Image (cartoon, rainbow, N blue to C red; front, side, top):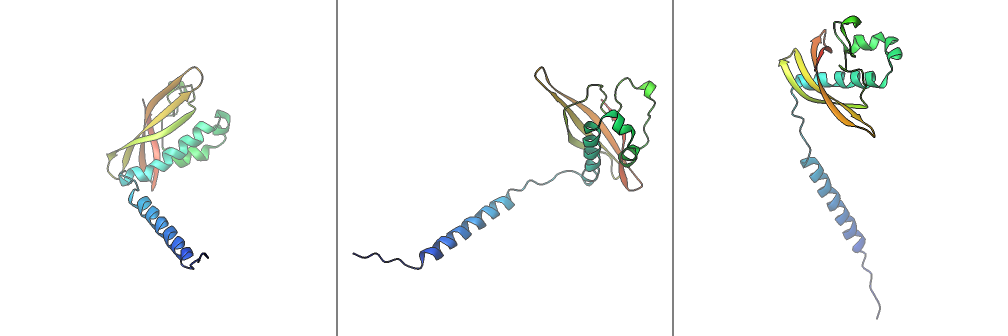
Length: 150
């Protein structure tokens, strides 16, 4: 008995693969998570994220040599070191290992937002999380950090 190999099987296999790819693409597109942030939150979140990424990753001596970064992300704040017993941007002298910019609230539409910034410490001895509130305000078309509170 001889076996007959049809030339249709490669076409069926390719058609099946294309159908699987289209089905997977439809599933991925239909399951996207919408961003529910207000427009002010979307606009100001990047500045807070970028500033704290730089601030936590940089030691104090390097930060002092880069005042242009403060000018880019931070508006006028009270910076009298005698009034601060702790770091003015973290509200602690124990630098965290990581952070996350969390919930955003619009304080004044089109003008001010408030973020919860979560600070994390994790090592062999402890696992801790604290929250600070960072207010931003738009000035000259840029979102700047204006205040940090516990």
